[in-house]
Length: 161
Length: 169
Image (cartoon, rainbow over all chains, first blue to last red; front, side, top):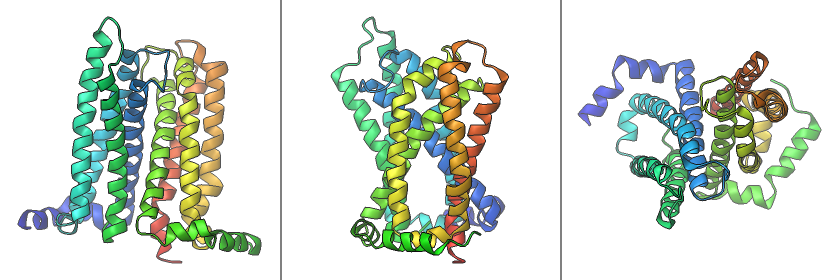
């Protein structure tokens, strides 16, 4: 716990956690970037499943929404890390928080796989998403919804956060 | 803070005592599932709405006209809205009387949300009908897109302050 105690007592973690105004700004940034991140990956996943923007190609949709996804992810991780640092010793041993981080890590991994595969499908002659590609998109979609669920379970099940 | 009228309090009291609201409030698992529904709906709703705002502002996907983006996202934009509203009403119903007295909820539901929704409908409809048909986005459309973005940020700010005001009620 030595590292988490040090992290929690850094000047910037105390500044972000002790001021109601600053804490609220980071909270707003965290929620808003989550909407941007999940919203954009959901659009791409739903497109791969053949449900959104059917007249557009996978190349067009992914080139529009992946930059938005990465911007959302960067802001979300930054604000999330600052919020975590302010209460690091409370969050670090929390088992629901561990599940949240694991699900998010899996969602990011599958998000990256979807992005890499989308580029390949966009370059292919047919431009058709194979069956396993649709399964991958569905898994990515479920993991992002799961990441929201695990995030809201942290305060709900353990009164932390 | 607006003091809710007796009629509003009676309605909220009835709402939070419906079997549906009691089932959500009384379950360890149902409340987070409803929260997840609300946030998933918001992600789809705001993700698609902000994509259009950012396109009007020239920050996203300049390769296609704003009209095409608005048209391709239209259905899912409103599906997200319906999911978010169902989740939001369900969350509100679990503690409706206290929420109706919370200044952050009042700012969110009576000021910022209606304004943001009106701005969104104007931006979406105008983009579909006139603003979005050319490569060059008119300055009015850019201002409207920025206004909508700032209003959704205000809605999120009010929402983030709801737990803060709960301590004083």
